[in-house]
Image 1 (cartoon, protein in one colour):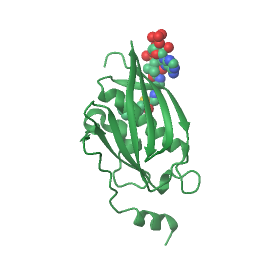
Image 2 (cartoon, helix red, strand yellow):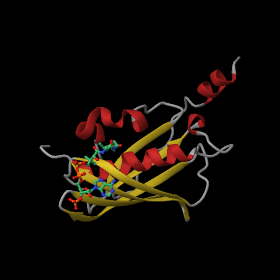
Image 3 (spheres, helix red, strand yellow):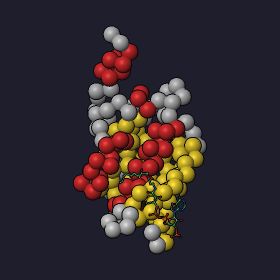
Image 4 (cartoon, protein in one colour):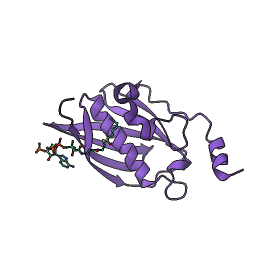
Length: 160
Ligand SMILES: CCCCCCCC(=O)SCCNC(=O)CCNC(=O)[C@H](O)C(C)(C)COP(=O)(O)OP(=O)(O)OC[C@H]1O[C@@H](n2cnc3c(N)ncnc32)[C@H](O)[C@@H]1OP(=O)(O)O
């Protein structure tokens, strides 16, 4: 059997992406539709699986699982995969806060290698709004360990 078939077969299991007790599931596709297809659009895929939530203060959070197709260094996530998560999650955080945006600038710091096949949490916060510029900060972590931090400058789309 080819290797890819073996990997596909072993990734068919359900992943527990449940949120914290006080989080409410957030229906991201209902808000931005196909914009999510690249990263979190395949809930049974072998690259990314994700579920979005909001907390009581309306901050956006996500549980993400990265599978074998997101691999960079052996057993760990590709930097582009981590950046793609930040792009989607922090851009979505601005949309969820009521700002129709595209990402103008994304600055990602890779702090620790992110292991595959582990559920990690993405937290985000809209930290400032100045005219069309919405600044969103985010972090990917598991327990005490931070894998990446990002600052995302989002620009509202005129006419939206
Ligand atoms: C949907 C939720 C989930 C998915 C999220 C996915 C997010 C994405 O990946 S979006 C795709 C990737 N992003 C893009 O393709 C964007 C490409 N860029 C553009 O379209 C344009 O450059 C755009 C819209 C950002 C800005 O263009 P434009 O509308 O002409 O505005 P512009 O006048 O240049 O800039 C507006 C303000 O933002 C600032 N600005 C714009 N881009 C940047 C930047 N990269 N860095 C710093 N400042 C910037 C400008 O300086 C200006 O500031 P000020 O008002 O103080 O003078």
